[in-house]
Amino acid sequence: MKQPPMRILYSRKEIAARIAEMARQIDRDYQGRELLMVGVLKGSFLFIADLIREVQTPAIVDFMRIASYGSETQSSGIIEFRKDLELSIKGRDVLIVEDIVDSGQTLKALCARLLQREPASLRVCTLVDKKAARITDIHVDYVGFPLDDGFIVGYGLDWDERYRNLADIFLVETE
Ligand code: PRP
Image (cartoon, rainbow, N blue to C red; front, top):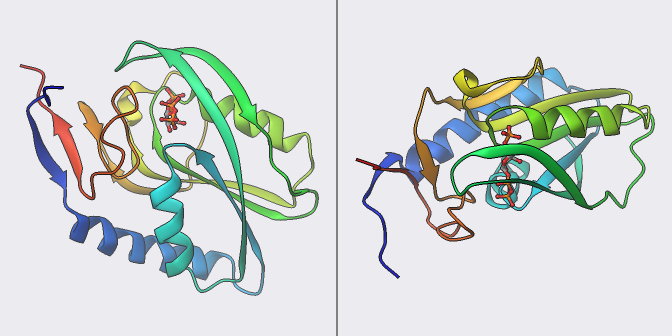
């Protein structure tokens, strides 16, 4: 299969440095508490693996599998919960870990679902925030890289399931 033209947007070195900074911020905010990090599969699998090893705050981890439908590069707003958490989040400090927030529809549906379970707190951390694409009013607490526009792959992010295994994040050049 022919690979589309792409160029590095965030190198593995830049990603690692930014994650270390985010972890320090999370540590400051959660002093004396225990985190329950919720990774949203599949896209967040590399980010949460690196973030949880940088964070010094005691942390446990669980995963949800959510898929949003649409074309290869555009989400449709139809969200399917395919795998639920295994742990109870009641009374816990929950941090959702996403690879990218785009329209915000996935996060909005996820937050609504998790809030029903009465966590002590619920915050959101994303590696990439495409704020300009937002069509919901959700709040993101920790952002690695803001991104104005463009389709990106690598470091967990896919194009039709491919390129998740790239160690850097690439911008796909559509022109
Ligand atoms: C991506 C990403 C977020 C969601 C963001 O997941 O990981 O969960 O889309 O889009 P939104 O803000 O427009 O809702 P995707 O559904 O592509 O599944 P994946 O994590 O398995 O790649």
